Image (cartoon, rainbow, N blue to C red; front, top):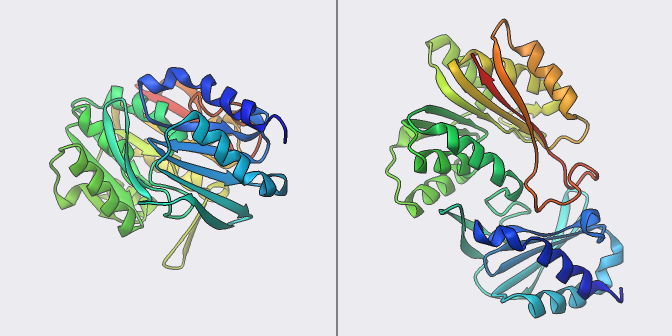
Length: 308
């Protein structure tokens, strides 16, 4: 592709404003930047390239040249995706781990740990939104992954945070993120548990929260149980609403591309069980995800719900 370099440089310049708040962002978002099938993420001086279709296979060295001409690069990995599988090629070698920062909060990432590096870049605005509400509040962070919402909330002065996830590995990485930010914690803050089951137990025990984060994977399997957004999100939303204190807030998001904002609002409405809502704001991916929701690889719908 003759104009590959200029297109990549234009996409990078398009995101200059974000450099004042973070050094972790999406530099190229496929079709949104006129580069269909090419995703490029920056994690400080580490670059993570995903190739989604065959047209880019012969352009990998040109991609590398364009990126190194525009940025200081310590590490560069390309992941050629074929469905759920991928082949990784390190073009600039070195440690795959690095530390990034957003709004003064630090996170460890590892660009060779599967397709997800440890921080979902598209959730940056939503983490900031939740942190703005969290001071003095009790927060339940379901499907916590590496606990980025928990870190933001605790940095913002949350009184209590519970991070739940089925993976011990990601919770350990969450603890690393707490340590990186100088946050004290106890083991009770990180619970290896199925988040839906935890919500059910919380209701039985009368445990309540001021803020619930509900960002489930589209599909997950654990100990013979399967979570599917299409089937199970309505139950999770209803349970989340049930554990919220008056005046509380719920952030519910999904990358499941068959569900739009209107459909998510219908799920919320059915799950309220008489709870009254003060306001609903539609949310999605942050601004570096140009063309969001116009193609499957860049999709998120969400609701920020304030309760009476």
